[in-house]
Image 1 (cartoon, rainbow, N blue to C red):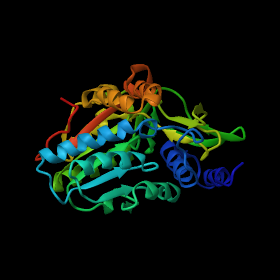
Image 2 (tube, rainbow, N blue to C red):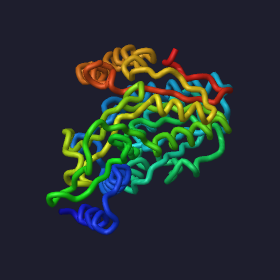
Image 3 (cartoon, one colour):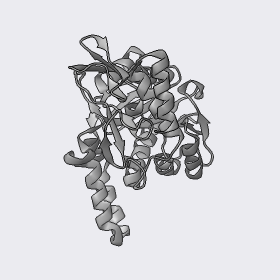
Length: 325
């Protein structure tokens, strides 16, 4: 038993059963503060790590939106949960070429990941929370950020808790589960309020569902495979599917404009990923197979193309980014 699991059990014995929200929050805080979870040697791989094309197209979409908004000189690139900084590096390469010269602000709590991010984007400014971001127009992206924020679960209107039973951790009740996420809705609302007040656009890219519906989506991943949610707490990545209907409502209530929800594969096709892949393959014929495999993984319906979705919010005086109409 790890020291973290021992401390978690002691907390439950002292305070009583804890909510699923509290369990997920504690586990992920420990997990992300103690390792680099990305890549073949980690627990999962995100789209920016699959291919540079993903970050390049995100950068192209943000740069084009910035230009149509009048190229405000004080606009900043902002990323929530930037991983190793790969997405920021690829996106900014395209954005800089398009004339964007703004500051870079990264919201990251993990000291280990901040080290990796500094290697990729040396001139960035780091923040622990959204609240300390600069009061200026932002070009914001959050890729696989919302899914890691804690969820609450209810069964028959009663909140589901994590307790100790039979010598291990266990849920106190089962049945039809309804999930909500105050943390996720708040993150979207705070982002939307900043955009409404100062201008800008935000891209949210994640896996999830278009409409709110009952169901247990809480999952654990370790070593690129699913694991039991309550086993080895703090040693695997805990996520839940994003309720994009709730996220959209939170942004609208904050006064922001919200685009239609688009599957990731369709969005990337509209932005020209297949044409970009052909250009890369011509320039690197020895990597053509690798490049095409990456495209397939990013856009195919049986891979990331349908499960992952893209939503944008923007201030009323900024245009919607490309790929949604």
